[in-house]
Image (tube, rainbow, N blue to C red; front, top):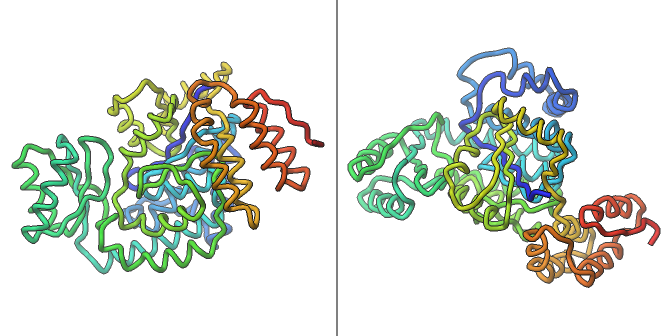
Length: 402
């Protein structure tokens, strides 16, 4: 079995009509957009598929479109192929799709959050008027950090917003400040490019919407994901539900550490990356990252998607359920078991990680301990049956009536 991660892209991948081919071809994808239309109270899918205007660049439209398209790709090609990913990561707005697809958040809650997030960010964009983002290419992160600090010291208010690759970093600020900063970076040997966004995302200008987002996010139930989900703010996998509640609201202001997330997943032994969404932005970033030997499948690329489907049809086993994440998720979702779940995570995480890297089952002692703690809180047969399904990925027999 190949240890597998699913990636969800962010803004910059939007286009009118995105997801339309999936909608027309796969009933499960149609169901995603139809459910969204019902929840939103209007036909967002018709707006997305049948119109063509610059409105797709408006954040409140863009974020919903990217979220829905990513979830549709996931349900068609990942769930539809019975693939059980080991980890998930999203770029900015993509993190919400990662949380939904990993089972940490309900689809309707994720959609509600994305819509409100887009509206709040759109208001900041409208009020700011001249915000933007500038890609810095061909310059290492430490040098970009040094020059950014020099810009700020000289009164040019810009900040690092995304760390995509060791030599692809994005800064943000007002357009005048970005122009001045761009000249400084180019003089130092970098190449620069203005991005097609209407405001300064992941910048201190987003401070005003953190509290409204925090209040909204806290009103929804989040459970521990069924697999590792990587956090944009820290670049590492979430270790508890509390961390998700803490970091998700401030994500709009903080730097997106995609490079750090990618390196963490590679270090963790990930062998296959699948990009669930339009385009292949994240896949291209991974291809530049030479820190490991892994396969990359951007599902938005027709040829790569066909190759992926062909390999699945030949029985190549992508992904394995992250047993530890599943057990912790069940424990953390039960009242009074948050502490037990976190203790279990900390206790066996190193051994499970080694087992995953070596493609073998955990020792009997570790697995038995996990099973005992899991079954202690699984009182209904549906959870027991689900555990039996999970356990087969570790070649371990567990009977539903134990």
